[in-house]
Length: 184
Length: 360
Image (cartoon, rainbow over all chains, first blue to last red; front, side, top):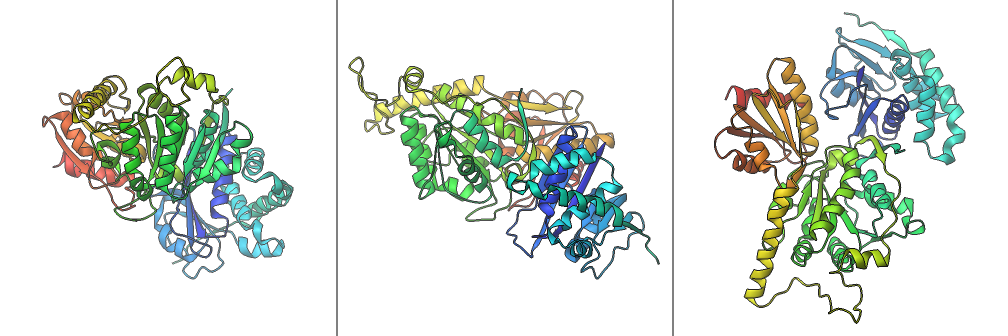
């Protein structure tokens, strides 16, 4: 099993930490993992992305040009990474702020309105965990038990009281994800 | 049991240093390696192992603090990125001339000049061929994973003390910034004063009545003496070249073509080898782990077997010169690389192999 993922969005959306939690979940599952961020002169409001690879085998290149799954959280990232999904691969996006919706017919497209859901849950910071939950619902590569272990490992101890809220957000993400069919 | 963590390469270097019993770290922040000192400051090793962590006023100050610490037989290190390493070159030359052991980490970014903060391998020449003035060499290790960032801290100190020579870990922004699984050994205690004196009889540890003064210097005003020192250094470098070459091969046994790459370029190239093998192209990867000593003989041994060699580096073509020296014109050698902080994709490298070596 090998899953090559790009997560891309605005800086401040929790893109990198979502990738880290996913990678740590893989470690807890006993998999090989790599987490490679874009680390340009980026800041809150700019773009941020991270490549996460989870594999049963040792990982060769941590740098990739095409992905099994792209998780896309803003329009700039859609413009850049929709075309980077392998044929037959998966694209998950949050519709918030998206003006040009994905149009490829050779990939599977899913939408998760995580921004809106995070507002409903009265916790904007759980946004990235809603997205992660949506992803995990589709790709059953790590057990929930290991995701929670990964979450615990990724968060500093002073934030451990937030774990139940994050767990709720992960489960909610799995509930609200919906498949999109591209129409002519 | 070894402890398992998920960490950035830069964070891993810091924790490895504490666990190896390093006495002092002296540095100055610069992207993409600032996490080294940040991690050290957060871990507060001065409260546990007694390791000193100091943010110096500049890179020039850091390297001279290493000179002092190394002269007293302590295990000392610094880390920086390309422009900062350039500032250290005078001190590095002095330390090499005075034959002192220390570890310098360069997490390379794109240059020349202030350049970019993105990953590069354009400091190969500086690390391997000199950088500072005079005939000297550093022992240069090139990690290609976060685990090797950990393992090479200990290896670099061991080699540095074995040969009384500064060692450099030549990394780059990819390995520094990426997170992978790492395993750590147990904490090793720092050397006691008695151990330092016993292990390093040359160190300036205070003159007892039983021996003459130990003098640490790189100054030999008489040309005769300076030549003598140079002859001694060259003999040492020859011994290092003979005994300390380290490299790794991947699918080289039946290879008709060879990719030679170090550090993160070797990781990317490994995937290129996989892509090419799927197309039926018999290509292997040779990854030099020590850049000095360079695996000349080991690469030269492939001249009868392979039809062409591609070097892959994130620079304009630097290590390619050493690969050409290794094969002595018997096999075609070409270079492929991106510059200025751009990173090749595995596909680009595979295309370059087909165009420059197989089709060219």
